[in-house]
Image (cartoon, rainbow, N blue to C red):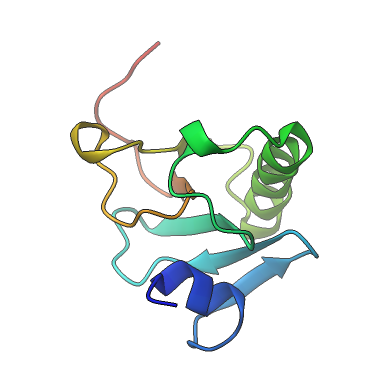
Length: 111
């Protein structure tokens, strides 16, 4: 298994876990792009969101993000959720994951 996020999900590789369920794990990003930068990772490997038709898992990822935003104390001021997809979408690790970023005003407002 060469996928770094699969290794983290299976506890073969250390990470700072902030939340975990049977289906996913939420960790602190090792290269944070904001004061709070968490990654929501499904334990099952999907290279991109395009491979994942599991609506329950996708809903669980969003609900986990909501819960950890509250735990981190960033829910009131605001946060950003991002799923990068493929090279031109900015994806660098090809295991479906969602970024939760907060703690400062984030550039690039989209609406």
